[in-house]
Length: 100
Image (cartoon, rainbow, N blue to C red; front, side):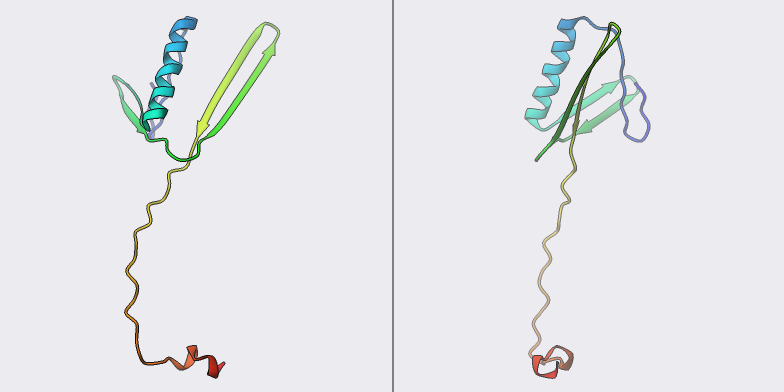
């Protein structure tokens, strides 16, 4: 694992069944709204929600085959509900329609 500023990276040689199991774990995590990646160096937790961007690319080049799957999303900003200002009964000359 390479962990730097909330980054996780893992690369290994696996058989097809193990890769299927990893993909199933990812889909379960997305369904639950929580993805967790960890090893002895640390953990990174992501919470996918809302619309997710999916990008799938595939290529073949002289016997080398590649499939890339990329899932991205933006965290929704939590907007605090602001209380309205108290209304004043004194008109402001700059805001009076008759003054414009």
